[in-house]
Length: 120
Image 1 (tube, helix red, strand yellow):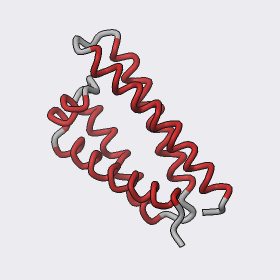
Image 2: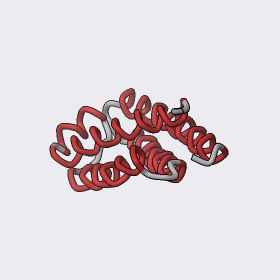
Image 3: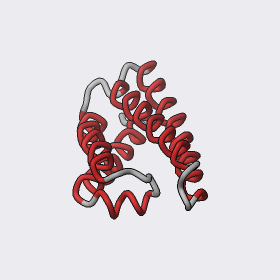
């Protein structure tokens, strides 16, 4: 039986792979769309980490360490958004990104804890 936490992990895994692929294949365009303020090499690096996490999120057993790693990466990205908000001419986009990544960090962390306590 699939739990809500496992379904969330599947959704996060699929999104992680899609965003990771976009960052690796088209770092400048994806970076601009997301408002990250990265250089192409940094965008590709985040994309490669996403591509490494994606399969673990979808098929790793147990699944909780993969969600914990995703939450950790979200926290790093949220910190970057917050730092970037100080120098970004589009402050709204950077602040929105920081807020969104902070919320995703909390949600992904909660899913990781749920999976850990249910031994999944």
